[in-house]
Length: 223
Image (tube, rainbow, N blue to C red):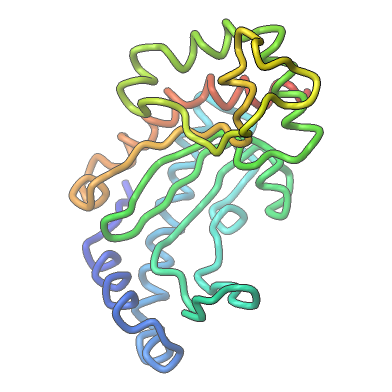
């Protein structure tokens, strides 16, 4: 069983303190080792998720992992590298479409690791469909997000909200608080110790299995 080592965390910590091209090139072998370790972990994670969600089984880690290089063209922060590893496993057919489906996000970094999922700023037709589904079947979503398992692992759903009621809905709609969400996110934070433990893969599978019905609700509106 693959796992995330302390060496990977040490590399990311060192990168955070030396986020420049010269240091990165000097430490490229460390990066390649850490990247390969993360890739092997994600490949095994895809297999585990595929046991309860067959819609993601066509993917490999390379199709789901984000590049470590930052796009700094429009950012005040010109640091060239991310200081974490990230992967987003979704039913989408292509990497360029990852934000068109709810899935399973893995974020590994010292002091900031998390397992998450849901819909991040879904595009116009998708968010409209989600709101329509809430309008018709709010009880289905509330049953999921109010379940003991979901509450224990994720707490409350997160996401920026509209200040007013979305178009087509009145401010006194009984589900207005759910309808005002612009993103529908669930986040489970993990300690560094948990990430480097031998049972982290098992833990990820457990958390994502609990997330599965939430993702299903958000994705079914596009079927």
